[in-house]
Length: 105
Image (spheres, rainbow, N blue to C red):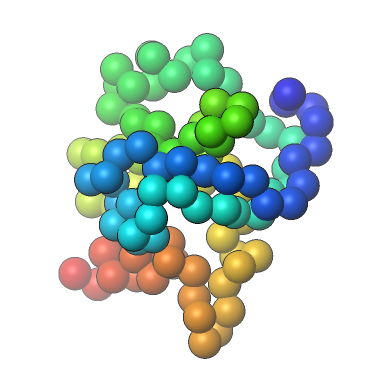
């Protein structure tokens, strides 16, 4: 699937209710927009997990990793989607709000 364009909204299930992603969204299932050809290679998921990176959000249909976090870091959240597509000045995206709150605390 690495070279196929993922375009549009896709679902994501947040599996870790203690994750920064869940705390930001307050939801277990979200929908986010994509526009890319790259994916996390699940063949490396076990090794990445052993080194401290957690896959906290996945596409429930394809099992593709959508969100990763590093628990030992104050606020390390990496996403496969584009949160800026749903962010507005008067309604910033939940991940942007959570990042700024973490940065100033």
